[in-house]
Image (cartoon, rainbow, N blue to C red; front, top):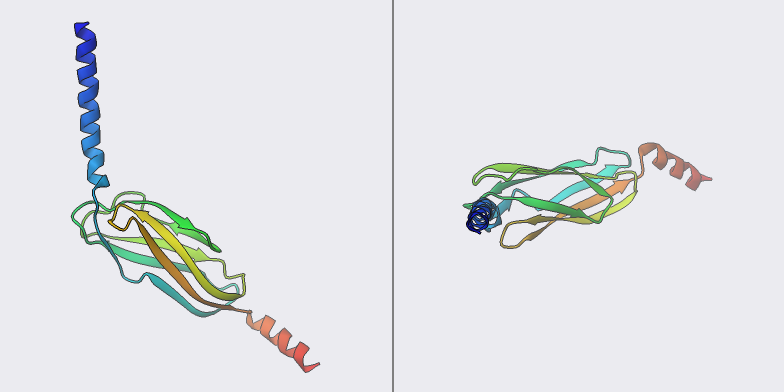
Length: 143
């Protein structure tokens, strides 16, 4: 009985120490993005669609990006895997599928340990047909 009691105390103490380490990440911090909207401008179909959101942890606790949600024609190329220390910078790289011609009006959302929790990041611009496609369309219109 005494051994079981000591075992339970040891397990409880271990859980307490583990919870203390995790609580630092659970504390709210703050983040400042250089830009929360990336403007692709007018780009040609097939152009490089990779862009970078740069940010700084402006809070007093490590910044953790738990997940990034994307419901657009874009992929998350890179995001921080480790917490960002106070005062340090980080990047989120996204790649928009520039094979789709038309306007770009998309939002991705970063799930963080900031007060806001969810931070929207916007992509805007327009993908134009490639130059060869433009010439083909002009030829069709002349006929």
